[in-house]
Length: 261
Image (cartoon, rainbow, N blue to C red; front, top):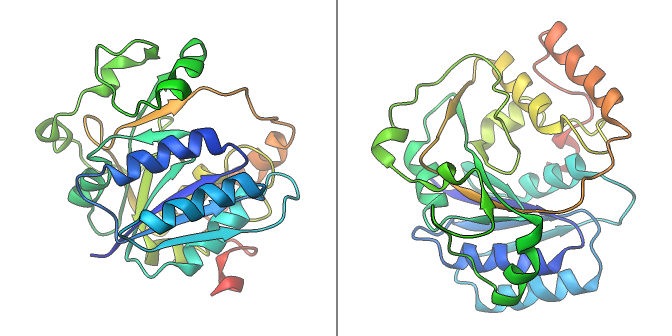
């Protein structure tokens, strides 16, 4: 099974630097790294190019012009460029645990997507984080909350079973799925612009094709760096699109990844 780590990012190279540092420290590296860049400026490109030069795995930087929040489109473009069988997804503001890729790959199973939790790094710890460039955390680390989520017990995570219902704990910064399942539902719905529901709407369509969801608590850990809340001005529109996918049992969106394949 060939794996790809998919990271979405937008104009926060200070955070992305720590995320990429945590990628390099993985106990099991992905086979390729996909960076879905929603229109960042030159400092982000410079950072990615510097990482590419040192990386032992292929790094594919996919960029488009900044035209508002178009995360769905840039994620589709990145997955279209991938040659991997299995996609592990996070965000450019989430430092990943050293065993993040290993855990997702270990627990992968057919007709199943995985979703994990995130530990929150508090606002008051941000300056110190960027100064120290720390990527290692534990239950006892300062400046975090939801600290029970730092605990990694692979045997306990194996006890969770796939379910045919959407969990409120689903987060796009800690999810993995088979690329074929993604392509089958035509990927992210690009009718959804602005923040909110793009990840869950994708998963709903996957579930409508018979894909189940499995929580991977005690494995697949990420540490989310605090930032101001993104505008939710499009949330009502995106809610309506998601509700239609539920009501009509949709398995495919019209405006999706197929145009990039």
